[in-house]
Image (cartoon, rainbow, N blue to C red; front, side, top):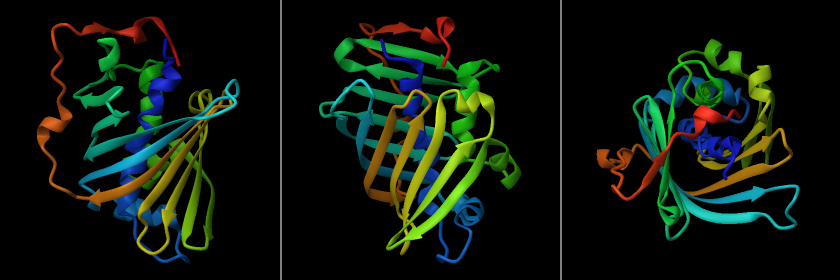
Length: 228
């Protein structure tokens, strides 16, 4: 069974997507520029290579995939070729589909349970204000090296630190194209997404953000019996 922490990892993409629209010079505060300019990003799509590392495994797990995002909070994430898993935000919930298993999982984002708290942390990628962002993340460092800038973010709340210890974002200095996003979890595991072929504000088919499940798919709601 996949842990809730592993499922939440897919939502890292909702944070990093908005960073594609940052612009500014190396002498500026990169995060402040992002908070000012991120509203320009209405849609985003990219391919990525995902590397997951675990203490118990000698070799990391590497898979390719694609992501599509549309403001304010719609996204579709596909991993594997052929597709092994799909994550789609639908209204006040998220559906995770595992085609090879004939299984889908539904998660509600209403209420104030542990799942909603974790998602709220990741939704800091779309803050309405600097204050909203600063309440959830501490900017540990902003470092420019060669042709890239690295932002290191850390959760401020104890609830956030229960599963995510830090988030590392790498951008190209020249055009601030999103290069990678790496999540380090409290259990010592990590997830690195390295992006390629990113497109800002492409025209996206609305059907990307809907997921029609075949009647043969078994649908479950695991959040009712587990926490992060």
